[in-house]
Image (tube, helix red, strand yellow):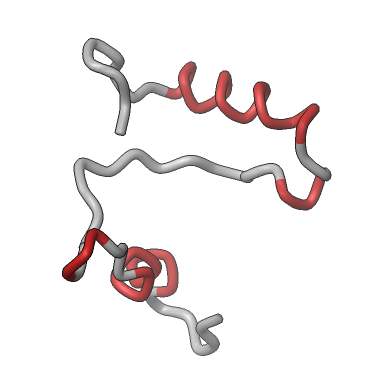
Length: 64
């Protein structure tokens, strides 16, 4: 969740990637960032990862 008053933008995406780059191995640096309003959760606040991943796997034969 973004801090109050912070709006998602391409500039913010670039800032986040530039911030993590020196702290992570190259293959762990995200290629892209997507902002969402909320995650699909189950009881106990756990995130339903399958539902979060679904939009990224649409139209692909193999899903990881």
